[in-house]
Image 1 (cartoon, helix red, strand yellow):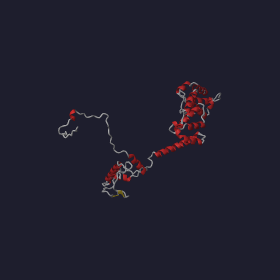
Image 2 (image 1 turned 90 degrees about the vertical axis):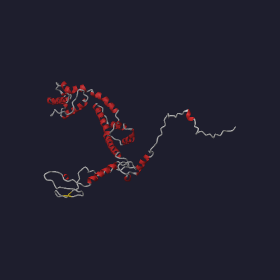
Image 3 (image 1 turned 135 degrees about the vertical axis):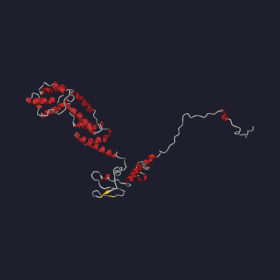
Image 4 (image 1 turned 120 degrees about the horizontal axis):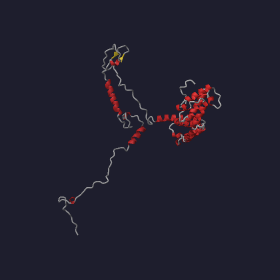
Length: 337
């Protein structure tokens, strides 16, 4: 019973909601310390063992409960008082646990682990309340509450005739992991497309010189650029790149290459519609090119005519119907009678 300042498990609070868990933990620790006979009926425990047991039980009580049972020195009396005060928790928790068990469904959970956790939470409460759940019941609960889209899988699992729930849950976890890997591989890129090839890393940000080290201390060779080196430094610790400044065409070449790469990234391939490459370097499969071209059909420029409901009508006067002399035709042939 050394180190009593450190609690072995959670204390029992005033509400007594976790009295059943506290009771199981207390009984287990009393047995571990050979003190379980101190709470038995008509026990013959020594006063020393009774004192150890009462100290242990009080140490795992809430401060208010500890003050209520401060004067008692018999662990059996304290145990019976707590049972009388919080023993009704078994009757209170049982209907709720039974309701949760009836409404538990495998299809309501996103993963097998979540369902497994919820199932054991409910079954542990039922066991604390005195109702035992067998493996056959858990197997039937799991298989009968699967989604209707898994009818074939459910029949296959039934044909395996599992005898333990742990065997079924291990198979379900294995299948869930494989399905997740399959979906990740499928969603990695579209079907038929080759993986994106990445070019060499861009080292343009790092300092590069046209001098090459020959292996000897302080001796450099001239590169292709018109470089200048003043010899090794003395008395300071600096890298060789700080002494040398190249004047070759490398920086301009890097600028041009970066400009070309940025322009290339804006190019759209007219074969497949993908950015980043020209049509003469397109490696997209033929069937994907055909799908892209077929999707473009019927998407040409369209002209739309808008017809107003009440278009404006022209207005005419009487003078508009008279003709001038120049417009009149004098050669009118009159019919004979």
